[in-house]
Image 1 (cartoon, rainbow, N blue to C red):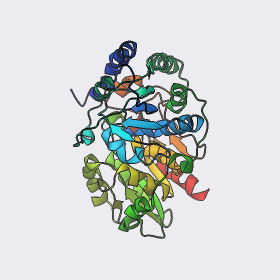
Image 2: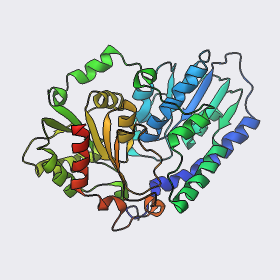
Image 3: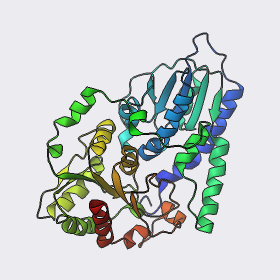
Length: 364
């Protein structure tokens, strides 16, 4: 059942009653204490969603320079959220997805009072935390969320590209979509850079190509045979080093792929956190991967990328027109997002197509 139905995504229905509970909480909220500490932005989501939201969050902070801003994110995002320029404090709450990477020990956190709490993405844990604090106002994305769900359905029926979730994040925070550079978003320390400087995998004059293969949903996963065939072709493209990234669940795929190649490939899987992954991406030349969190982080790092996409609608497209997207769905595939089929759209993508995309980037 678990392999045929995407139970993880079906958890999203829980967000609607949580938004409603927060709206009700706003009507009967505790009175503010005298110690009001600015704005709390609640964004308990997955890696890719968080990466897509960061330009909008920085835009909000730039438009409200006199306001102190705290973030609440899911536990794996903590190290990256702490490097967002201008953020004062970061708190954690589990997302709705219940992934294993969120099962970490967290110290007890006492949140202050806030003038405003803005809930971009919610969860049961976030609801519990917000319910315990005094807030002058609680804003939720319930109406925007509902309208966007309808918009996605219409986009699928009309086979049109939907409005990007990146733009929706700007709307949630009262801004207008615009490009914000990597340097405007993040403030890394010398210690952060030192934490990746010792990695042997990065000690090379070769062009560094970061690879991410993993997905928890088979309709979004390109199979290992395809990766092997692609890498055998790509090995002869020039002076390149292939570096795999991902979580511990991706180790078996890497071992399978690497064992079938007659040249070395490299792995940082399970060895770096998201903050370090962002710096690795920033220091790399190319990214190739499926629809995933690291893929959206690559867009944020502005490293040239090739996205191998499965079912649509696709609302995390790269903002830079130089990046390449390989997609056979033509905007279709909502069924495949939730239910598995033997032959998905991503399985129609060939190793030759990905190799030709890499050659295009390489030669440009």
